[in-house]
Image (cartoon, rainbow, N blue to C red; front, side):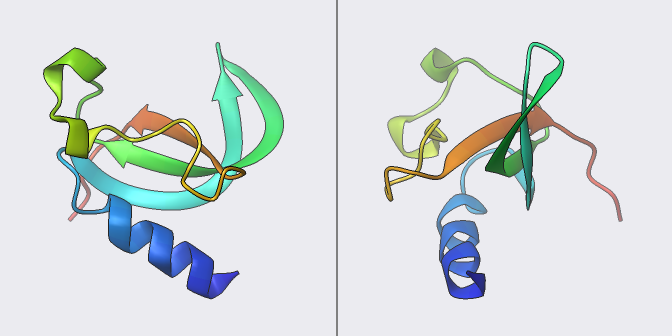
Length: 77
C-alpha cells in the first residue's frame, strides 16, 4: 500500500494548487461517507473549467477503485 500511495502522491502533488495529500474518508455535503479515499488539499478549489486538463484531479484514480476528495486547505510552514 505504501508504494501505491507514493505513486499516487507523485502524480498529484505537481498539479496546480495542490498543497497536500493524505489518506482518509470521503466527506460529501458535510457528511462522512466512511469510504476510504485520497484527500487532496488545494489552496483554492476551482471549477474544472478554470483548470487545464492536466491539473484536474479525477474523482476516481486510474486504478478504477480509489476515490479522491478535494478540500480547500491552508499551507502551513
